[in-house]
Length: 255
Ligand code: KIV
Image (cartoon, rainbow, N blue to C red; front, side, top):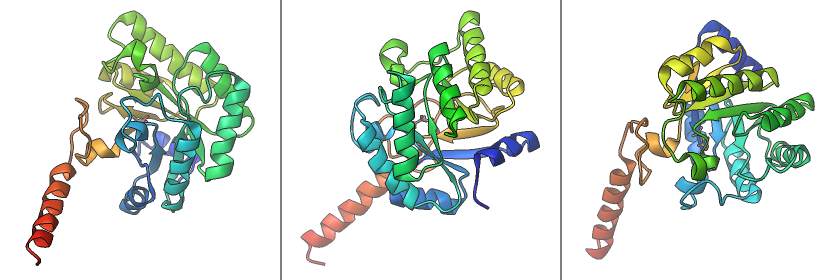
């Protein structure tokens, strides 16, 4: 069965957890899809994990589309969602429609993800969904605002918690089909999950969300810096270094 945005909402109603991971190329996407991941996010974290930038901000729409095409070619079952990079949608609703439209038309992904839930972004989401472009929201820690928020947990004060809850409700009302909740207290994520009718996909937001997402490089121990909430299941940096050193030794010793 191919995963659709409607299926994710049914899974929330059935309390069937939604498994999401990020991918940045064909090989990773194929492995995740074959393993049974439900949603594959071409996250703009690829700027850091695949392109070596210090933040997600330098990533361009052309770079993102190039990676999204490769990911889409590797996937048969999962829903593929493409992040819109920093400043490819914040300028105007018109710009957001053009960028999201390019993502769907040129790469074949089924949906886009945008960061933020302030009133201007909610209007943008309402426009995109009204013309048939499925949108995943993203609130809490939004890495495209790193120079304002840093990478620390959000929603620590009652006012901040109220704001994040209001943003999630507004995004759901604007037609988003799911929302990423990043690095917020578990109790707040639980409250949002119980309030809105669409799935919440948590990352560092406790176990009560309708699904979970991680950056695949963090899950596999490929990242140079590990976020506090991501537990690697394997240390691929060590595995790859050991394999390459074996090869160096065999070549050097003419084996
Ligand atoms: O870019 C990304 O990988 C993301 C996830 C952290 C949700 O947005």
